[in-house]
Image 1 (cartoon, rainbow, N blue to C red):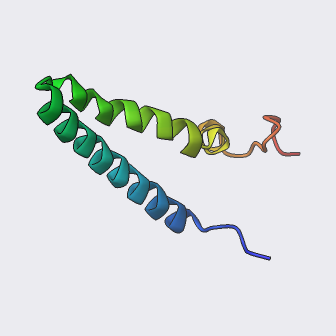
Image 2 (image 1 turned 60 degrees about the horizontal axis):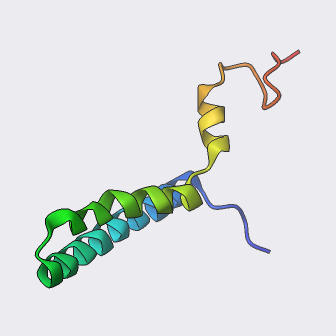
Image 3 (image 1 turned 180 degrees about the vertical axis):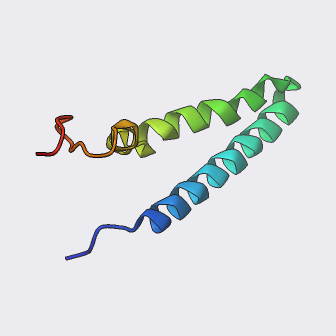
Length: 79
């Protein structure tokens, strides 16, 4: 049984995915631009980031950060 990943490891994982998305987007842009002559292929960079974000993002982390201190996941103050 594996233990949950640490926040630092999660950040490193997301950073690696971010850099990989940018590199793949640039590669698609270069190849598409050379084949067709259109620079619109470089729109693959933000498009790829947006698509991968849908799979990588964890909305629970956003909710935890936005709650005031002293509240639990239910949003009610601690008793």
